[in-house]
Image 1 (tube, one colour):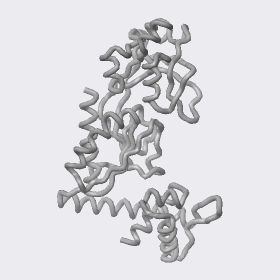
Image 2 (tube, helix red, strand yellow):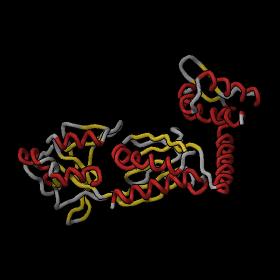
Image 3 (spheres, helix red, strand yellow):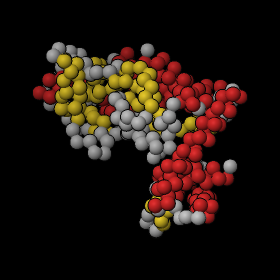
Image 4 (cartoon, one colour):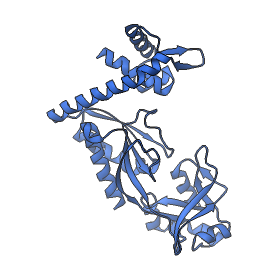
Length: 300
């Protein structure tokens, strides 16, 4: 198993571009990660990385070895999965990412029951509203709201997620109640936008009597955390485009109300993404099944 650990560490160093980052990922010290790479280099008789004080870059030999190393690990995981499936004892670690709102409200709350049912499966949950690079970040699964961008990933649709444009009664009393998308733009409403690095323009696609139409919206406040936008909307600072499950309790209590009802936003697909078919790995299969059931219940 030492060779497998060496290969796995090599792959993570290659993908993350950092010995310390790979060590954190593999739950070992940088010294152990470095010794694994050195041992692998001795075994292969070739240097796999060029090391300087500022950078760690793969050599030509490292680039050649990477694809084969990924295949080695994939084959081992598939073989292990078959054995575990035969023994009906899934075990291992699931690395999963989810949007902040979904993760906090749906995924994290289901983990205690999941761990009780499958105590040999560890879960590493990463919550972010940013797009994730599944390969670079070593993820097994990612919950994704929106259309699929990376066509190399396996896409398993869970459900359509309804969305609403919402604002606090205090904001409406101050700025008026926009009835449609055109009023958002024409009346200069403060729209609360989810911004990530590289975003240049915000457009909300709404369902109009003439069909789907995209509206360029703006406002003084932006964040990369969807829950921050909800808090700002509750404080009367603007209008937010939110998944219904994230604001259902606030709509029920009247702290938020729907606006632009004549041109509602389109629902977005909620899907489970993975680099490979989850059915090939028992731990991923049972985790994905529990996640999908929890998500469907939350969106029902």
